[in-house]
Length: 250
Image 1 (cartoon, helix red, strand yellow):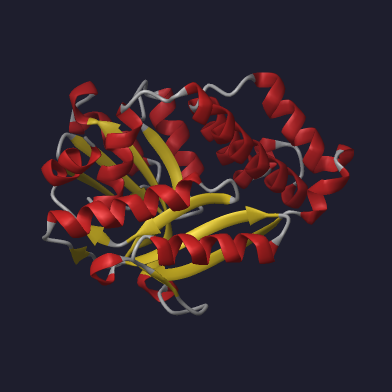
Image 2 (cartoon, rainbow, N blue to C red):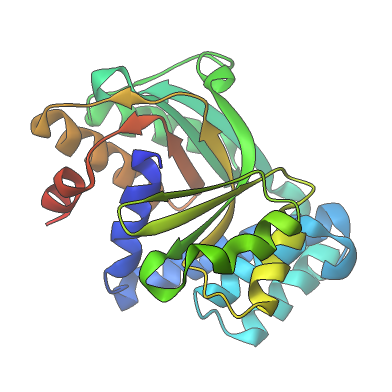
């Protein structure tokens, strides 16, 4: 399991501060709006929208907020057309490759903000294509291993999952993009409680970060990027022991 998945899991277990929940809902709503704009407002025929809605529900986003975001994307919001998806590529401490996925209505502003964050926290923003080849788009579903047995995940394999990994108290189910929705639904129907279900850029290989100081700098860079209002997701190819991540997370 990648260090990034472990870091996300550690943060997922921590309480969400109310002041940050509003920002989270804004990002989720923007993703729903873009998905509805690009593929229509019916999640049954729009996998991206189905995924965005599932993420919003997992974060306890109110139903009316979800419906409002869909309506905005299907024509009731004039500014929906101004939002575009941008992928930034760069390096963090210890040479870790980082992809930053943003949804923005002002590419110049977001690009400047992302570059500033990279520089401030010891990284560097690269050119398009500089690290993208180190990742591949996959579906990743994480499950608390204490909540189920590995045999309970056979339904995921039967529904088309590519692999099931076990590490540090978590199961990680990997799928191709076409199979992601079917695998998630199969797990839901089997009563398996999922910690997260995401379409992500998954690293093809991992870079060990052995020193705690570098790990701390890297996590601060990733957290700062994720806190930016325009950033939808951050992916990195680091490999760090879970106990070190727990220590850095405090």
